[in-house]
Structure formats: structure tokens, C-alpha cells
Length: 318
Image 1 (tube, rainbow, N blue to C red):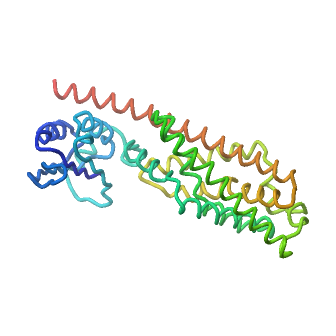
Image 2: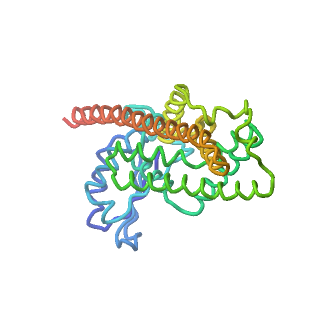
């Protein structure tokens, strides 16, 4: 269940109420006349079954509610309502599976902002990955994978491609490329310092590393894992269940490859750099492809659901 709070000029209040009244996914509506000061007008609240959110939000946008005012969408974690239960029963689909595109797109924009927090997490993860390589520690590799913030930017590219948001593609790609470049540069500088102090030597990078050799030896399974992980991650981001994200973070070899690239640059170990760069490119390419395909399938499925819902409403109205 979702809760809508709509602030609109008084002239739009009746059209908004008309949209909500005609939608069987809406279970309750309240109007607070004159409660909005910016814009000057009214506040309308409504409870809405998640499965019917896209059509309702699109209808509100078509009225100009998002342009003239604000449409605020909040998930409702706990609710007790027979009317709400009836609304979910009337609306095709399942709430857990439902993709609310306004929610997904907003999160994509929010999570792909290039800021110091993003760069810090990316750098911390890459430095941790480089230490994992030196110590040949799989546990530290996992920690670096979980810490890295790159997945949402990759998923955002898929969202942008499916929803035809050119600006979002540029934003996500810029954040990803700058984040990777910045993290590798800082890690390389720190690795040079560690080399000068004698903390790391060439043998730490080019010697036998059974626990972390996969970082610079990509194969067909690297691509398969990237496809599966990205598909699962996108499902977690678009559904109401997000428990699968931690599994995604510890499945793909993006941040570890970045850490190994920095170490390879430090010692001029170009084989390490090349192998890790291939691993990084393979994972990024596989994740973008899988994310786009997963979202495309979801969009196609929910478009068919929406068409079925419109037919049912047409029959009911007739």
C-alpha cells in the first residue's frame, strides 16, 4: 500500500479528486481545503494499492498536478483497512512484484549524484580491495565488495535506457566513470606511499595468490555471474523487498579489480592491470546489460497489466 499526499492549486482539486474517485486501486481519500500555502490551494491525501500506482500517478501528472504542485508518494509499512484489502484484490498483480516507476526513477537520480560521500565510499572500498590483494584475503575482498557504491549507478543506466531518460544516462555514467577514476588514482597514490615505506613489494602483487587470483583472470563465468547478480539486484531495487542486494554486492568483481589495477600501476605490473581491466569491463558490461533487460521485461509485463486493468475499468464503467 502507498500513501499519496497531493498539494495543488484549488482549481486542480476537483480534477484530482475525480481521478482518485474513478480508480479502484484507491481505498481512501481526504481533502484539506486551504491547507497548502505553496502552492496556494488544497492538500489531498489518498491510500493506493501499489499495483495500481503507475496509472494513477501518470493520470495525476497528465492533469498537471506534478507541474503545478507536488505529488508525494510514501510506502505504508503497516496498515489495517478492509477497504485497502479490497483495493488490492481489485487491482491486478501482486504488491511485492509491482514496479512503481516514479519511485525507481527518483531513487536512480538520488543515488547517482556525484558527491564527496559517493567518492569517499568508492575510495574506501578500493583501498580495502588493494589491501585484500596484498594479504590475499577473501574476507577483505568481500568487505570491499559490500562497501562499494557502484551498483546503483549501474542499475540507473538500465532505468534510464528503459524509461528514455537521456539526462539520467549521462548522470549515472559520469558518476560511475569519475568515481572509478578517482578511487583508482587515490589508491595508486597510497600504494606508492606504501611501496616507499616498504609495506608492499612486487612479489605481493605478482606472486601466487590463490585466494584472490580471480580478480585479474576473467572468464565466461565472470560474465554469467554479472548477469545473474545484476538481474537479482534490479529486482531488489524495484520491488518492495530489498533483501537480495547484499548478495549482489558480494558477487561481482568490480571494486576488487579496481584495487588490483591501482597496485599494478604502482609496480608497473601491466599483466595485472590488463587482466583486472578486462574483469572490470566484463562485470560492468554484464551488469548494465542484465539490468536493462530485467527492467525491460518488467516494464513490458506491467504495461500488459495496465492494459488489462484499463479493459476491466472500461467494462465496469460500461
